[in-house]
Length: 268
Image (tube, rainbow, N blue to C red; front, side, top):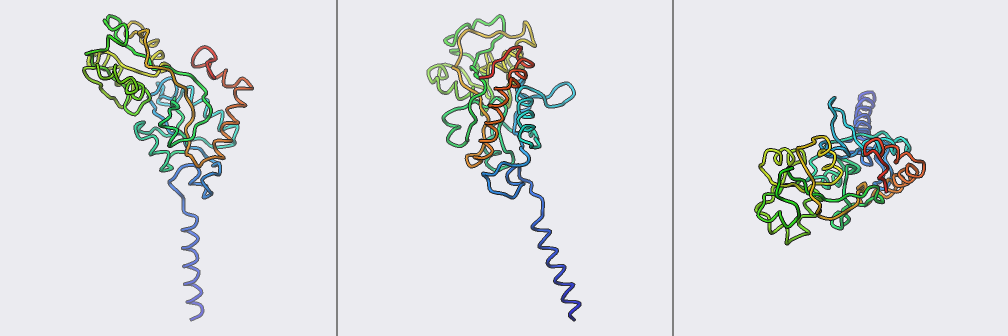
C-alpha cells in the first residue's frame, strides 16, 4: 500500500513540475517568467514587412532593412536573441500590449496619441509625410488634392497627419485606406487613386526604384520623428535599449548602417 501511495505521489509531483516548466507562447518578458520590468533574454520585434527600406523582404524573402540592422546590432550589444515578427500594422499596439511582441521597431512615428499607450526611445530618425503622384499629374500642391481620391496606409502616422489637417482632408473626394503602402502605390500607378500620402523614407525609396513612374510634390503633411515603441511597464528594457542606441551612435555604428541604406548619415 505504501508503495502504491509513493508512486501516486511521484506522478502528482511530476505533473506539478511539468506545469511549472511549461513553455509560454508569449514574447520576451513573458517567456522569462520574471516581472514585466525585467529586460528579457529574447526580444521579439513587431514590424510591417512591406515597409522598405526600414524593414521588408528581399528577393530571397529574407527580412532586411535599416531598422532590421539597427535592431540586430542593439540585440547583440544586449546579449539578447532577436526575433522579427510581421504583424498587422493596424493592430500593432494590441500585439504589443498582449505580449505577442516586445517592441515595435519599424519606422514607428512618435505621436502624442501613441505616447498614451507606449513608451518610446529617444528619436533616432526624422521623417516627413509626403505626397506622391503620377509624373503627369495636375496635382502640384496640397490645395490641388481637393476633389481627388487620395490613398494611404491604415493605422499609419500618414493617416494621422491627414486627419490633423482637417480642412485638406475634408476637401478630398475620397480617402482610401490600404493594408500597406505597396498596395497604395500600385493603385496610384493603375490610376485608382490620384495621390498617396506616405512616410518620406518609404516614398523616396520606391520613387527611386521606379524612375518615371512616380513624382513627389513640394507640399507635405508635416514632419515627425521615429522611435522604438515598448510597453509602459518595460522600464528596464527601455533603459538598456536606449543605452545600446546611444552607444551605437557615439561609436559610429548607426552612421554606418544609415549610409548602407540611405547613402548618408541621417540618424538623429
